Each structure stands twice: as structure tokens, then as C-alpha cells.
Length: 335
Ligand code: NAP
Image 1 (cartoon, rainbow, N blue to C red):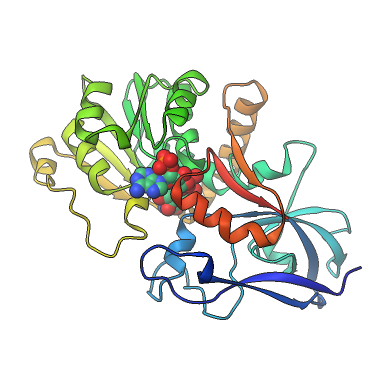
Image 2: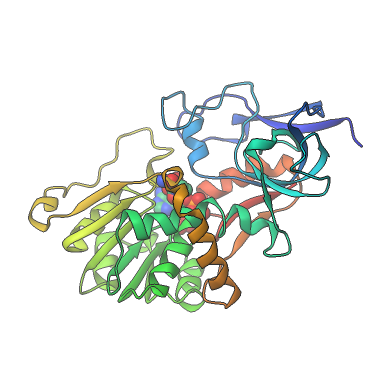
């Protein structure tokens, strides 16, 4: 077995958009697992929007990355050495030490996955954290109910794709999505069964949403913030609900957002805006996996992935590409 491997470190904290120089690729010794640990060769690693927040030195729900230290995040790999009775060489495991080729993982923090039940990559996407975010954010946070008209932004992304389809499967009266290219808009309508979709780069979101949902919306699943949230507030009906899941339009901003400017509408319409974190909904995980796996098996829940090949050196490019919208569905790196 090889004795050295590569890892990606945070080279500096970006102000505004990160670049390739934000990252440093370093060669290190392959670590040796101790008692109760396993050595994992990573096969896929995830690049996620929340990682941009961890590049800032600010207090949040998860600790910032440290400059000069390896980054981490969701990954899926194969056990190559096991010092834990629960894991055998060859097992596939999901864990939190991505951004490196080999990881020593405390067995308590590894979850075995069945590669024959679903493609391994799905456990980082549709059946993993993003899928779970969609499920919990729509059904619990937004208290979705049959007949609701739903709007989701970032609709062609990992979370957004699943939100729109679960809404449809659970009896939404109308499902509307926004995304950043004509190809994504076409995909949402023709492949994923959205009733309407628009490219937010084509014109004001407020006007495009009003045209796509002429009778208004009951639920808005917000992945973007800013003018998307403002547009949704305009379109929401009485007692409308909003899941504040993400605000990707602001993650690289150096100025405060200019929108929403219409929060006063919350009063007359008695709207509810509620933030959510997927980690608060672990109790829903078994139900989610059971339902989602059945939908995938019978073809009701479709998903796409953008898998960047070429190994760990491509990880920074994949992350930057995801921020620019180069992915449809979950953005992954194949190591
Ligand atoms: P994703 O949607 O697969 O990828 C990010 C997408 O954001 C890009 O593909 C791009 O698509 C879009 N985007 C980038 N800049 C934008 C802008 N200025 N305006 C509008 N869209 C923009 O990522 P994801 O993993 O599914 O995450 C989606 C959102 O959910 C993010 O905000 C993330 O932070 C949030 N999230 C929250 C939780 C939680 O627990 N609260 C968990 C997971 C994810 P376009 O081509 O459409 O622009």
C-alpha cells in the first residue's frame, strides 16, 4: 500500500469569492489507525455550500476551518485497515473526513453503507445530508400539507431537486423552481415534473415568480436569500410559510444584501419564516431513508449528480464550480 497521500488545506481566508489560491494541496504520510479506529481510502468527497462559511473566522453552528490545516466534510470510502470489531476491510463507510485521500476515522463516527442497495455516491446526495435537508425542511420546518403551492430556489441543486419532487409526491397543487440556466429550467420541467420553472438571470425574480405562480404560493423553500426571498414574500398567501435553509447569494458577498425590503408584509399576511439545520432532525432519518429509497426504486424520485473526476487535486475546482452553479444535482469529487 502507498505510504503517502494528498490532503487539501485552507491556505488563506477568502474575502469575497475564494480562488484556487484559497487552497493548498499537501502530501502527507498515510496515518495509522489506533484502537477503535479505521483507516479509510476515500472514494467520493462532497463539496457543499456551507463549507464557504467555514472559511470565515466567525462563530457559527460548526467550527471554522483552520488556516494551514486540512479541511473536512462529508466523504465516502472503503475500509483498508480496521481496528474496530464493527468494521471489516472492504466495508464502505460514510464519515466526516473528506478533502483527503486517506482518513483515520473513529469507528463511532463512521456509518456503514450498502453499495448494493444504491450507488455509493447517492449516500452523499439524494439519500444523504442534502436529501434529508429537503425532507425535513419541507415536511417539518415548512409544515407542508397536501394542496400547498410550493416555490423552491436553487431548484436544480442537490437539496432543491429533492424539495420539488417531494412536494409533488406529497400532493402539492403547484411546484415552481428557479435555477440559473435554461438547461436547468428545462430539466426541472421535463425530467423532474415541476409545473413551472424560470431562470432567475432572465429578469426580476418577483415578476418571474408572479408569472409562474399566478395564484400565489403557500410555501417557499429558500436556498438563496436576497431577491428570491423578497419575491417569495410578495407571492406568499395568507399564513404562508418559509423554510430558511440557505442564502447562497450572500456567501461570497462583501456588502450586506439589498433585499428583502418587504418584511412588513409578514404582519398583514401572518407569514412564518423559520430557519432550519439538518442536524436537528436526526430523528427523521430512518423514515426519510425508507421513503426516499422506495421513491427512487419505483422511479418517482429522480436525481442527478455532477461528479468531477481526476482525483483530489480537482477538489478546489469542484468547490468553486459548485458556487458558480456548474453542478446539476449533488456536486461530488471522485478520488
Ligand atoms: P447546490 O444547490 O447543489 O449547489 C449550489 C447552487 O447554488 C449552484 O449550483 C447554483 O445553481 C446556486 N447558486 C449559486 N450562486 C447563486 C446565486 N447568487 N443566486 C442563486 N443561486 C445561486 O447546493 P446544496 O448543497 O443543494 O445547497 C443548497 C442550499 O441549501 C445552500 O444555500 C446551502 O447552504 C443550503 N443547505 C442548508 C442546510 C441546512 O441544514 N440548513 C443543509 C444543506 C444545504 P444555479 O445555477 O441555479 O445558480
